[in-house]
Amino acid sequence: MKDSLKKVLKYLLSMSLAVVLLWFSFREVEWADFARELSECRWGFIILSMAAGAFAFWIRGIRWRQLLLPIDPSISRMTTFNGINVGNISNFVFPRIGEFVRCGVITRRSSATYDKVLGTVVLERGWELLVMLLMLCIVVICGFDRFGGFFVEQIWTPMVERFDSGIWWVLAALILAGAGAFYALWRLRDSNGFFGKVWGIFKGILQGFSSCFRMERKWLFFAYTAFIWMIYWLMAASTVWAAPFLDHLTVMDALFLSLVGGLGFAVPVPGGIGAFHFVISLALVGVYDVPMETGIIYATLSHTSQAITQIVFGLFSYAYEAIKK
Image 1: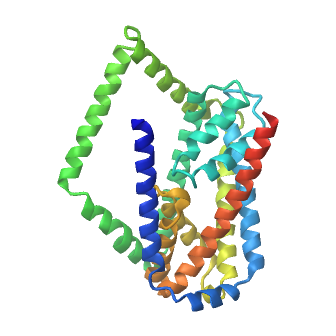
Image 2: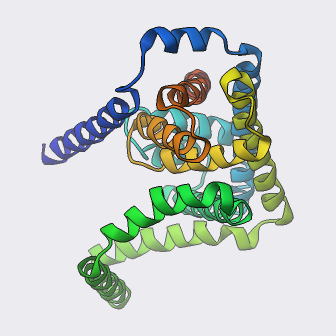
Image 3: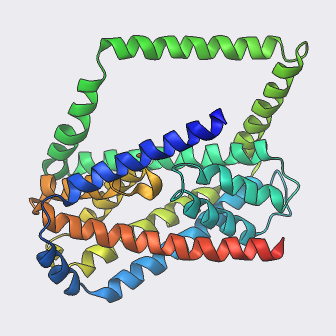
C-alpha cells in the first residue's frame, strides 16, 4: 500500500511539474495567431521528421542488440525494436520507467536475465548522455558568439548558483556513504543471504554493462551512434524547414535546438511534456530573439510530431509482442 501511494505521489508531482512548465510556456500565447501560424506550416517536412524518428527507433534497436548479443545471441532485431518502442510509450505514463519496461520485453522473449539486460541499458543511456553533452559543448564552443550567452546565462549560471558549498558537502557525504555500502555489500556477500542476493543483482548489472567489451565488430556500435545522431539532426532540421517563421535558421541551428531539446527530455516529466516546450522556446528567445509565442509553435510542432510517432509505434510494438507471446 505504501509503495502504491509513493508511486501515485511521484506521478502527481511529475505531472504537476509538467503542467507548471506548460503554463509558463503558453501563458503569453495568442491562440488566434497560434492557429494561423500553424496552418501556414509545411506539413510535408513534419511527415519527413516523423519518418526519420521511426527510423531512429529501428537503428537504436539494432545498436542495443549489439550490446545484448554477448548475453544471448538469439535476440532478434524485431525484439529490440519493440523494446525501444514499448519503453518510449511507457515514459508517457511515468517518466523514466521506459528503461525498465524495455528490459522486460527482452527477458520475456529470451534467456537473458533482467539484471544483465538492465546493465546494457545503463551503458547505452550513459553513453548517449555523454555523446549529447560532448556535442553540446562542441557546438557551444565553436559558435560561442551565438550560443555561448544562452548557455552561460540560462544553464550554467543558474546551476552554479543552486550548488552552494552546503550541497557539495552533502554530495561528498553521499559518495562516502555509497562507498561504505558497497564495501559492506562485498564483505557480507557470502555470509548473509540478503546481501548475497543484492550482490548477485549488482554483479548481473555489471556483467551487462561490460558487454561492450565482448561485442563483435565494436566499431558498429559507434557507427550506429553517429548514424542515430544524424537522424536526430534531420528530425530537427525538418521541423525547422516546416516553420516559415524560422527560415533564417541554418542546419547548425537545428542541431543546437536538437541538443537543447534533449536536455528538456531529461527533466523527469511524462514524455518531456512542458519541459521540452519551455527549454526550446527559451532557447529560441535567448539565442535567436524569436518571440516566445512564436518559439512555442516550433516546440509544439517538434514535440507533438515526436510524441505521435512514439505512441503509434509503441502501440504497434505492444500489440505485436502481446500477439507473439
